[in-house]
Length: 290
Image (cartoon, rainbow, N blue to C red):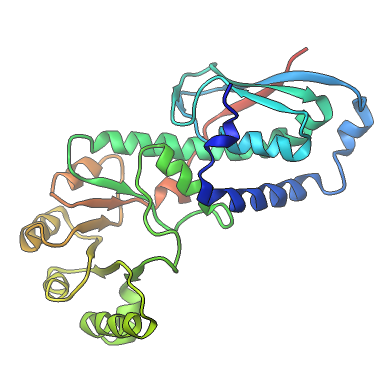
């Protein structure tokens, strides 16, 4: 049996360890008084996680980490893998250990497992709608505060591509930067001066809201251009003007109903904030065996 915690990416491990401690402190406080008052300290038992809807599972490794933080005697045995499709009423994991520990971790583990699985499920749906094109689905920074690493990992599990992690690892010049800097050209020029002073290299993306702004951006040294809230006709025009020289990202008002048509315009990326900011959690239950 493979320990599910072993699949946590190395770059996420410290962040997830800190997050697990924080969310458990939030829920447990000074202790689970209900279980302390009703369950013997020596009682051991088992339970199971069951999917109550069709979807894609994500977060089993984090759930296992949560229970281990409570009590190292708990073992979570996955019956499916992260990224695997499941059906309604399908068992997805078994768990064994002290009953108090199982009940102490139940809700926190479910909250994360349900949210991550919901994100992975929606991501898989949207990537399926643009399958067969050269377009890739991106997430955004519209994540739950404190849960970004989990939200973005769930997108990756679902088959999407992660955009920047935060404000620190990529340049994205948006409308407010452009307004404050005095225009697109001025903003890009200032960025290049800043990078030169700091002696660092970073991907530079600039947002445009019209074909005129796009034409200006195409004369500048940038790595990607975001087409913000453009019509499908404008996107097709933008693709022709870019001529494959600079990748284009479509953003704004993307839905399951229009994503395939947007991908068909020839853009290279489509970013969807709804993957994480308004996700519907996958219904999963936890049942203690009699």
